[in-house]
Figure 1: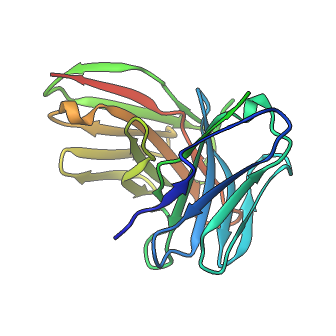
Figure 2: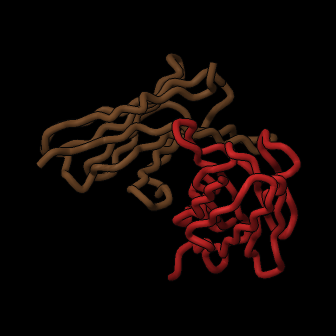
Amino acid sequence: EAGVTQSPTHLIKTRGQQATLRCSPISGHTSVYWYQQALGLGLQFLLWYDEGEERNRGNFPPRFSGRQFPNYSSELNVNALELEDSALYLCASSSIWTSDNEQFFGPGTRLTVL
Amino acid sequence: QKEVEQDPGPLSVPEGAIVSLNCTYSNSAFQYFMWYRQYSRKGPELLMYTYSSGNKEDGRFTAQVDKSSKYISLFIRDSQPSDSATYLCAMRQTSGTYKYIFGTGTRLKVLA
């Protein structure tokens, strides 16, 4: 069974640009979560999508947005990039058939903003 | 004050030692407590989760929750070099708005 996949692995952008990160959940999983892991700050919850709908978002500005497609894959968009957006962005998925405490993580996309 | 506090380490121990990793929290509404392991350049993987107070054992790993003290622990027995990783605690409420909070992680090095 394939795990959660994310693309690209690395992304380098400059301040003010937009970044798009992609995530494919485990087959059969309908929930996708996005986290930001910045140095020294741990994982910060960004967004939760389930069945195509945004269910909740963390304490991030509106320039962080995303969507979930009918095949349950997801996209995270970060507009007007700032230097402090440099971080590892992790996607996780879960299924109604497993405990929603059990989130399966992808390897992440490392975003560097210059 | 952060909702979840975790010592970042690094924690270095000799192979075979018993390792104790800990987190404290301030939100008494947390009911589910998780431990994740994250190897370098990988995403976190769930090791164990516990509901409410008590102990849970899985092989060499034991998770302990003391809700009265708002303190959780992960013990690793007979530690191996392959246990070298960052260990993240996480916790969430049972209901209401989604709230899943991670600690900053503790880096563990098990020396051969």
